[in-house]
Length: 500
View (cartoon, helix red, strand yellow):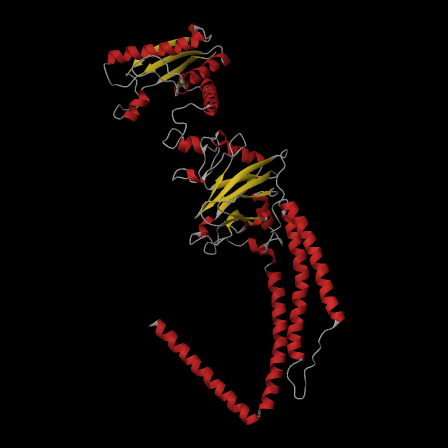
């Protein structure tokens, strides 16, 4: 029904226009073509002048009204070190093109009025004017030279890569439909290599896990942080189609091209909190962020630095939005410490892990640090339950008390802890699941506890500080109903008896 009404309205409007045309034709015949032409020309000329005034006033008024919403003006000064140079370049370009814009539009509409049709007026044809041609050649040439030189200076400054001796951090942004995968380096400060042939459902950017540099790389969730005042080099790549890495408030914009890595270097100079405080000074940012909730947060309170894709990369293009928060170095360091390695949390010891079954050097270091912190907490704790720690990486040959080769790493950590705390006296306890004869399990658990104690005494820990004991299957920590739970019960642990 709606479609029919629209069709009828179009037909009606067409009929009205045809009738108006016929009325004008009859009017011309009555008044005479010369008089009608003169009247039309006069009205067109005056209307052109009126339109010129309204148009130019509208341009100026709208630019003034929305100046605080535009990049480079009002509160939206650049939040990066290099951004002011780009803002200055755009301001100078706007200055010169604005002059040309105003002059050409005044001339356009003034000429429409000045040289409207009049009876007896004839056109005058001028083949050329040397002075005029010199003016409109020389002035644009000078202006263009000025803008090009400034542009080259800005380009060379903004697009300069980092120097080998510079202090900077490097992150990686991989665009895909429809998300940005952001990768930070681990404590080694280096990003691991990638290979598109290694892309899988679990390894979505194709990290090469044979490269040790990538073992500690992290891929945070939705929350992305950058430290203020720290130079950042962003590796920019794409996995499928053309994307564009766009951080408007930092004046960062670079294509992400499949098969052709690009980069951008910038230094954030305003934290998110500082930028919000700038916005807070302007009335238009002190209105509710959600018009439907007048008592809710203001616009300045909801502001975030946005990472967008500036290419139309598909129907889900809108979902490419990510949020970056710029914080102090201390806050960034605190957040960074909590990030976990993608490799060790998502890939390690799974089918895709090329190092499955091996103990890596980096793991040894990580385990040693975690072990040391756990012992320190246990020693200082007043809770008796907190003084029992499981030796997670101590294992034995099946059905035997012989330690596996990799157990030495965990036991060496225990040796270090006993040396660090020379008054520490511990009970070394062996436990089994409930499979098999209980008496045999009790004997085996005691032998395993003795094997651990012997490893420690062989490395200089006095036997008087050790209390090896086997408990068999008498102290389970989980029901023995699944293989996973039985594995939890097959454990070796130690309990701090005294730490004076």
